[in-house]
Length: 346
Image (tube, rainbow, N blue to C red; front, side):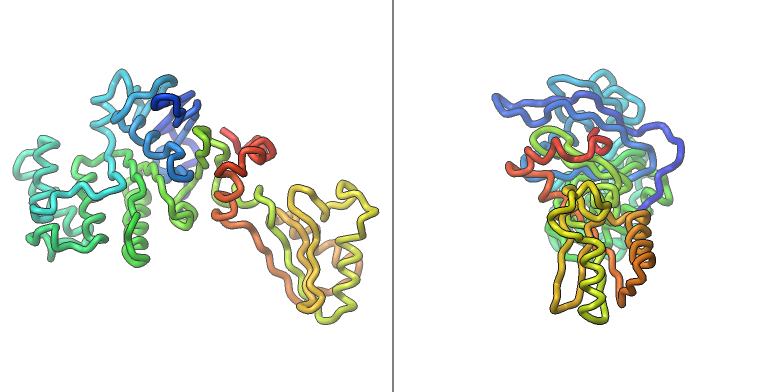
């Protein structure tokens, strides 16, 4: 994962973007602020509006209301300037399968009005960078899916864009090809300071690459933050304590779960937000609700020390992005949106 600069101008901003198709509202007033030289991931179920957001920000569609600026230019009033600063790789490969890899890149160089010499130099550089030199003279129809996606991204880079929109760039790729694409994306950010706007269905992809993540559902951004921030705010996190014998387990259970007569608010280890204490007598384990933070871990260790209770093993379990996604999206999630911490809503 890249590290966001401490102070930087925003590469992308949006305020109140809305878009409807007939009586269906796809975007319902979304706001964005994305720093330069970072990876921003937009997650959401099918039909949530991810592709529509990319299309508006890349000038392919016009919002019904709201404003957006990309690379310092208004997407409505200065669309040509925006297009000159960005690259877009869509869900499906846009390469010409009848041409060779080199011919595809040279065609893109012509579209960017590069002279012949510069176009050939740029094509050779990108073929080398994406490890396609040996296949440069072969028709793209003979390429694997991973090779096509690499060529697709290489074509996006012909114009040296400062901001790249990647709309589900690894859909259909095998795990090895997907990780190769991840390495390429990391290199673009770390080595060249490119800003990446990523939409993906692969939650591990967002977890691995993104500096910040937004969850889009029902036309609204229902949560935003780093991957760790989002995970810590989802119920289900806990600290698992394993004991050498039943005596230790029972003593800890009495400490962390004093019984139904004690109000959850009276104990830092009982929280409606994070769930209840769980006990497994056979495995000699106790699951203490936790947000996974260092203060929460310290409080559990301090409580054990004060009570002279020794745990044989301690592990911290936090929800993953799958849990975040399932909690915050879909018909059953709407009642939960209001309870999600406000500081994560944008």
